[in-house]
Image (cartoon, rainbow, N blue to C red; front, side):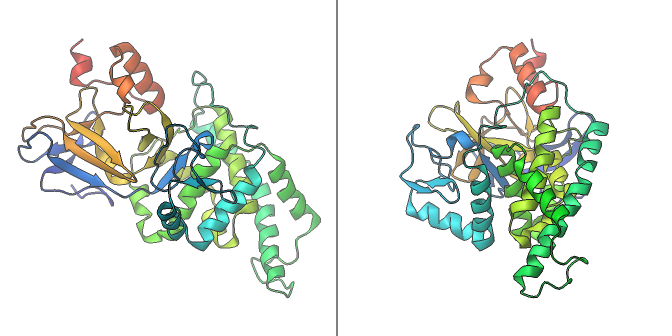
Length: 358
């Protein structure tokens, strides 16, 4: 089979289609225990939950056992474990990225509790029709906001002449659309997710297919409230992000990010206590090709922004290379509780060797 863009390649394994769980990774030779299988440094987007921003480094995800980090950038809302990480973050973001996070922090600061509570996990997920209607419902206001921003650019050019998308000086209707968006409740974590993905696409347009090629979840929103938070965030970002980013602030981009991240993200957790503290999550496209097992053949560990995958035991040629999607604490739960977590978070019922044995 032709490998999807961004899929991992190695002499140790190959990717095959399976009848039961889509694409999977299989050993092409015997692999000894503890052998390095894969190193994934292709982080495309990441979210540090707002409540941990003061404690977790925005660059390397280092954790100071709950203590606030000493280096804090109040204008962007990020903290860092040292000058080196702060410099790396700024270089990675570039001027546009720093402007974007500054605009987001200005909007979010003081309003982060408006819509930051986790959604009720027992509510039904919105179906395709509801999702389509929600995004379609943003169209009119989004067009007005785009016109206002286009007029803003014209005014910045110093001439006030109609020269972008047929728009000139913003009208009262345009300004009201912007103000209406800014008055809506803010979900800082969803906003961080969207901004991170938009910035990555802006800075890496030739690598966008790495995200497009990932497995798709057509109904990625956990509740109607979460869906509405995404549509509000779309309008927020149209209203505040730097003008060069606006071509990437589209319904297509945000929906694609949601449908690909849903089944392909990795938790960013504390490392010292086997990952019990959940700080956020990120998408490493190459790493997402490893499927789940409650008795994994591959053990993963994160060092900074990179994931390392090693053989957890001796592996025979032809064996599937599986990781676990469960945290350290969750791996020790009963079969029933593991099933609940996997169904809730990942949308599947586990049929691994460990689960089928009971």
